[in-house]
Image 1 (cartoon, helix red, strand yellow):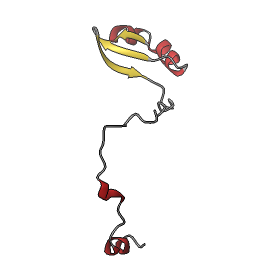
Image 2 (image 1 turned 135 degrees about the horizontal axis):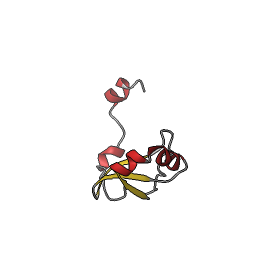
Image 3 (image 1 turned 90 degrees about the horizontal axis):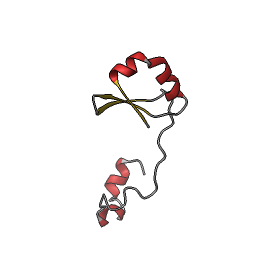
Image 4 (image 1 turned 90 degrees about the vertical axis):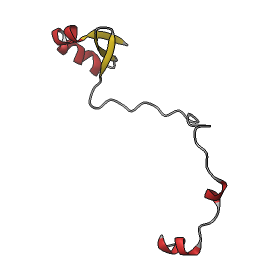
Length: 77
């Protein structure tokens, strides 16, 4: 990851855009605080990690019970 200040980004914007399009992660900061990430418009989505939500949500046991007939009818089932 490359981090540059706003002043440097303004001075070298064309080069930074080329680097971002080539896959380099560019972070633009105000002083030492990162404020913006420069990425190409068609950047690939980050890969999903299987199991990354494990333990963060709870599903009530009733969720797995069959729906009542009136609700099934409402869904056209």
